Length: 479
Image 1 (cartoon, rainbow, N blue to C red):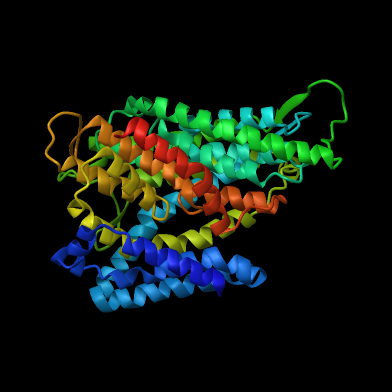
Image 2 (cartoon, helix red, strand yellow):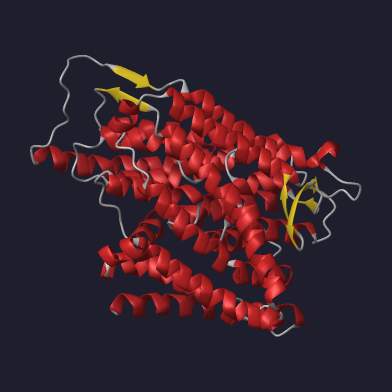
């Protein structure tokens, strides 16, 4: 009960801290169409994700689908009363078909393919090795996406540190850097940047964020190295040591052919951003062609192609890889099942919050880079960072500024675009639900014996290490 009261106090404080013009907008016509109380089921689901593993862990693991179903019903039924059945069905189908479906298929494909790649060798999880792995994974994220890099690197990092007792901090920093920050340099890296590319932001423009990424990497890797060195020495002092049976340095990768299937998935993601702009995939009115489902909900042909390519890559990966490799990786379906169940609830119940954000976003008076950095980042910590990015990109495009990056949403000054991009990508690391691979890394780590922090425990880590870095970013880059 104490934890619940603490959480509700945090929520209340956050609500009271909202700018006054949010509430002013809330009294207008736009926000009147989106009652704030419709966001309660979303907050309730987040509360369950945060608290239930602490107070009723076994019950929670066995009954997650029921709890998620309850909160979905708690959102859908009042939504019907406010908007009618037709609008409700359209809203639920829109987020399920065009957001959740491609999201979970991408995670599934990367989960399958990465599970068929294993790294073996006598590298022990020392502070220097771990710093190198985090740096490699962070830079790799912009090449194959934060989800791809996370799924590829998570098991090797866990394996190399399996002999250690104190290792949860390694996976926390893994989420900070590999699962989030590393994706800021290309549209492949993180979905918000892909949406920006689809709306006219040049493909290689994000390379302008390299100084910010290197700056943050230097700070976080410095902090991580000293923290890991302290934990490493304590493990050694207790008599723990890595199992290195052969002299010398041996290293091999089994299932390396799966890199081809990983590249297939990356290619499918790129196609999903390029094909909608081609005339062959547009009708006479410029709309993307697809399969009409209900109302204005359409499953586009580019999305179907992406799904087909990803599923084909996953199937080929399993067909061409020996089961022994998955056994050595301790491969199970538990992590992807948990993510699939929890995120269908998150995607559906957060729709009123996203609708409210879209209605009041242009009226918030956010015009400075520092304001957009923190507004985009704070909301991306709990909401899907892709629509949050689009809301504030649209807001920046309506300011009437004539110099900057020309997009289909208007001209956006480079500094504002940098602030929005960094807020969406960097601050997705603030919570487990801030970005797709965060919860997946947590689940895989839990399955492999890493005692990961709770929902609130993880937020304490982000408050201690990430928020100070973001404050420094504000003064160095966004003022």
